[in-house]
Image (tube, rainbow over all chains, first blue to last red; front, side):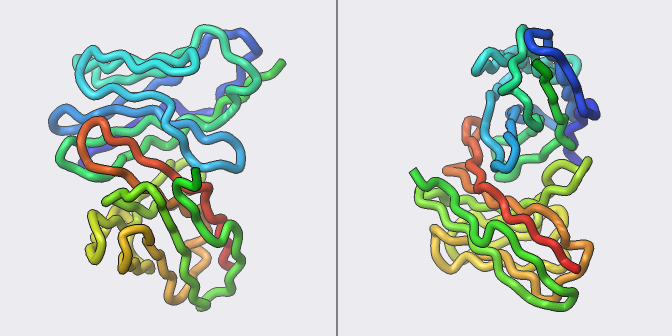
Length: 112
Length: 114
């Protein structure tokens, strides 16, 4: 079946450091890919998405590129802030399907 | 902008008790979902609905039942709670299942079964 694998956390960085959170997927076909973010005590919010190969999703300084050849959708940010501390989830979804399949989540902690 | 609202936000149950979690959305979405979130396991789909009066099983449906009597509401029931059902439960909704559709999540219900 379809699955999403994320790097395990927690990831601890200093403010203004470069962030990469790895995400790879296994699926038959070409799903849409998403990054969701969950701030403490809140539900998940869509951070960015990409619907086809080579698309780049971006939002709030975060970027991720849909790489079909490596089945990856790594999340990057050039300079993290304390306010970016949260849990980040990579997910996939198919055109004909209705459900998001999530990775295990990666907790990011940014220290001042 | 209410979006997706879950009630209650917290609950403690004794083993064997029953309860119903309510999810309400005001975006006229067809699709609704119930997920549970456990440490290190991400979110796993319990049940989902593609429209009023329809429900289907997800990845981990055992021990739960659902109903979608009205388009805006999706109820998750636990008939006889077990400690293994201690988790954070999230409801979500989406407009359609197409590639650009995003899901909107509620703030979660933290359930503890003792």
